[in-house]
Image 1 (tube, rainbow, N blue to C red):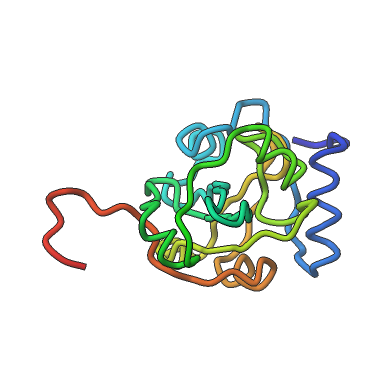
Image 2: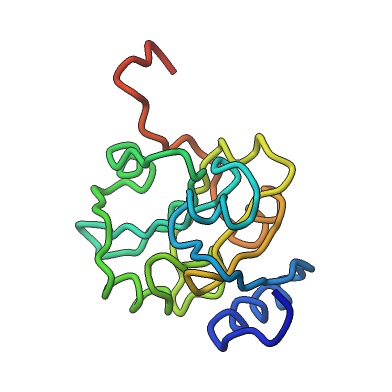
Length: 168
């Protein structure tokens, strides 16, 4: 994990420093492209992975960033309610164009364009969480409160409930 960061991971490290976050980006030998891979490589629970998922507003083409606990799936209908327009999962070209990063490595900060940000309330169950840092092998640790502060994200319920769930 020691050594120089790739240019992309260094961009995230620089963004964190500019935002006053003391966290250190690390590049791991194993892939962190999926939440399960990240949790295994880091040695944490999959729920502690803050996955950055980019959606596209269907009316405005506005990018929406949902930062979601690794074990949760996004309820796109709920996301649409929260953003006041229907949304769809963005394709790889849209994600790279709006964030500057490839799917699997999108960090919560350091994007080339401003994104509406919604943060999964389930992340606040943990003292520390881990987020992608620009590449499918780079991550950094932070607190949920720091995540909210540096993204100006709104903390909401965005997870898809299972069919057996009786109420919310």
